[in-house]
Structures are given as structure tokens and as C-alpha cells.
Amino acid sequence: MTRVATFGNYQSALLDLMSAQSRAEQAQERIASEKIATDMAGYGRGAESLTSLTSTQARLEGFISTGETAAARLSAQDMALTRIYEGGTGAREAIANSLAAGRIDNLMTELGLQYQTVVGGLNAEHQGAYLFGGGRGDTAPATARTLADLAAAPSTASTFANDSLKQKSRIDENTTLETGFLANEVGGPLTEVFRNLQAFQNGSPVTVNGVTYTPAGSGTLTGQPDANVTAFLKAQMDQFDKVNADLTNQTAKNGLLQNHVETALDAHEGQKTALQKMMKDKSGYDPAKAITDLQLAQVAIQASAQIVNSLKSTSLLDLLR
Image (cartoon, rainbow, N blue to C red):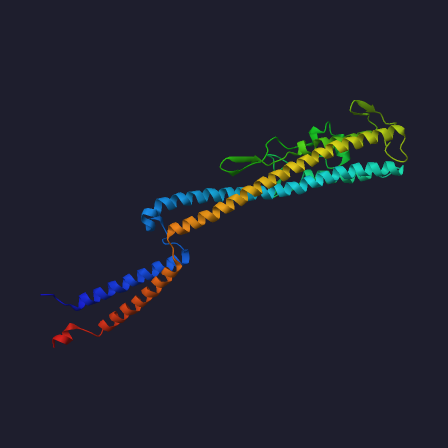
């Protein structure tokens, strides 16, 4: 004979209520996370595949982060290289305009300003570090701030404080790019031309391409230029043409690196989208089903709660009387 007890009815109703609450909570978690489970244990046999996809996604996110950092740095370098080039071409134009006018009274002042433009580019910063300092991102690589400082230095090389470590960026599994430039390599030849101009102004002989130009004395670069000064300045214009052409090549190289990084980022973004779709398919998440499950669970909770409430006023003792 089957026994019927008040305790058994309560226990059965409470178990139904707890089960309905658990199903509602699970459905809410799926809706909130857009996943079928919040841990790998909930995926059963599909956990191994999802673990592999998650690992791939983590590596991909790392490459995207590295690529975005490299792209930002290359963009900053492009602006700095452009500024250095503007200083070089500005100096060349200043000499050409002065010779054309037949007076070079303000030439050294103009050259000093253009040199400061060059120094500003060489000492450009990105995210708190000097772009062209190599591994010494906390030290300004171009130390001679004025033409006077430059001429007083024992050599052009001594005016650069950068080391030889160039920035490298791994943008995918098989590609590592050397994205950094060094101040002495970028600005060394250009700085040498400025140094020769100031040395000549100070009265020191200057040798260019095997030809030595000797000034008449200190302060020669002013007033109306004679044949010797004119020849010297024209030789310096030729030097500016060469170093400015090299700067153009450096800027073009930076642009090629930018294009390469952008292409890699586009590819990674495409892979990321495809990977997200695969993970969503593997997770088995169905928004419509999750909402339906939630609604059914809520109905079950209400029904179980009503049963429990009705049992409060019902006892088998009342039936036995």
C-alpha cells in the first residue's frame, strides 16, 4: 500500500520550486552572457574544441594589440620624420633665397630656427618615450639644442645619446618587423651639414667632398657674399639635397611599414570575426530558446509557489477526521 504524507508533499513541491528556480537562473545566465554555459564543464564534449578556439582568440587579440601599438608608433614617427625633413628643406631654401637676393645678413638666424625644427623632430616623443632613442626612451637623443652647442661638440656623433637597439614588433605568428629608427641614423648626416655651416661662420675651415673652404674670419656669413662664401654655400646646398633625399627614403620606409601593419591588422580583424562566429556556433546559444526557457521556468516557479502556499493550509489529518 502506498503511503501518503504531508511531509512528502511539501518535499516534492519544494524540489519542484528549486528546480524551476535553477532553470530560470541558467536561462538568465545564458541571456546575459550569450553563451550556453559560463564554464567549460557546461559544454560537455564540446569543451575541448572551445578551449582550442579560446586559445587561438587570445593569441589573435595579442597580435591585434601589438599591431595597434606599432601602428600608433609608426604614425608618430611619420610626423617626426616629416618635421625633420621640413627643417632640412627649409635650411636649403634659406640658403638659395639668400644667394638669389645677394645678401645673407639673416641667414644664420634662419638656419638656427630650421635646426631647432630638426632637433624637435629628432626628440619627438610617443607615449612618454623618445621615438628615436632606441632602448633609451627616457633620454633625449639629440643633445645639441642650438647651432652653438653643435659647433662646440667634438664631433657630430657625440651630439647623439641614443643606443643601437631598434624597436621590433611581432605582428603575426611568422612576421616580426623592425619598426624603430635611430636618431643618429636619421639625423646624423643632416646635423653634420648644419655643423659645417656654423663652423664656417665661427672661422674654421670646412672640407666638403674633398674641397676645403676657408673663411676670411669669424662671422663671414653675413652681408654680401664673396665668391668663396658663395661657393661654400652652394656646396652646402648640394649636401642638403643629398641628406633630404635620404630623409625622403626613410619616410617612405616608415610608410611601407605602416601599410604592412595595417594590412596585418585588417587580416586579424577578419579572423577575429570568423572566430567569434565559430565560437558562437560551438557554444550553441539560441537567444529565442533561452528566452522561452526563462518564461517556462518563471511559470513553473509561480505554479510551485502556489502549491507550496496551498499546502500550508492543507493537512491529511483534516481528511482523516
